[in-house]
Length: 96
Image (cartoon, one colour):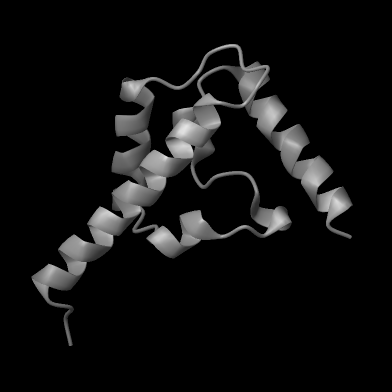
């Protein structure tokens, strides 16, 4: 059975809501060289939708999955990518 269009639309709205929440959290991370802009947000949203990433994936707070899915679209500066990877590594170590 195919999901109804209302279910798909609701799921997409939930994904956008979660993505926006994370986008603003990412912008508040201290030490970033280039905070993601609206352009990066739109690119990231398009990829999340094409890859059929669900809102539940963005809600996960598992330290082993701290790095956001498809974060390369959101973080354009290599130093910022490394910052997020270091934060994920530190969270994993504290989670033991």
